[in-house]
Image (cartoon, rainbow over all chains, first blue to last red; front, side):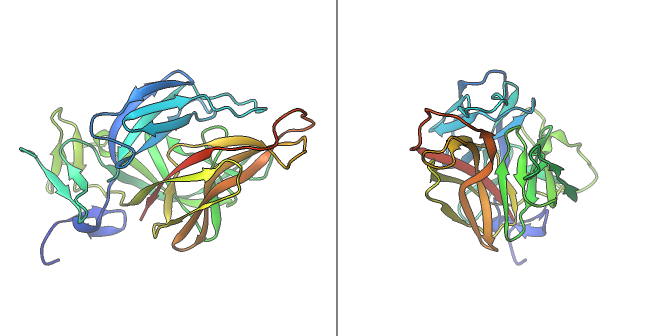
Length: 96
Length: 209
């Protein structure tokens, strides 16, 4: 390359100029089927995405990310025997 | 920024800085799915511990959330990339560049391969499953970071309840279709339930190059 900076990626060396990364901005263990939390300052639904890590093998909660407020609610699937998870990590990944 | 380190892309978006750990590639391999309880799908892990998994979606194929925090696919095996936030990996020292945050956690290392992201997407599709939303993306690797499932009646007047999961169907090398996909019948002979549905389901996806 003539100028700039290249880094190693899963696809070989690439210029920073054309890359996006996923960065872990927030990770918090949750133990209730519903609740609210606040994303760290500066992370919104326009530059970040919510992620889950389910620890108990149950149904993921529904998530909303309104501004900086994160809400998770019990999934209202009827007739299924698998309840909503009460043991999961809620994460915020910055992408943009 | 007043001090520290930040590297941005052409859009002015931070790719690396001295505050947040990037996700790096741990392994790339091929895994076999586990047959789902009703034998309609193959199940795959979505995360193993703190390591999110990106699956390479063949064209055509589908990827959708399961009831148990896992991912469903019609493919019996898939290529997978395991990622990990780099703060959980050891500093290799020697030569190259490593960046640490104010607490001494490693947030970047030139010794590890970064997982390159195409983009994040949050598609809004109708709960009634009447519409789909197209995502134009050139990346092959998909992680469904938070999952959404819904139950609905198979057809107006029916007494069978079906489970739908809102996920991705890859329809070409550059096009993904977001929509509700039938998972299985979860109840039969149910009466008195609504036959119409309204509302919007938000379906997030993270696509990697």
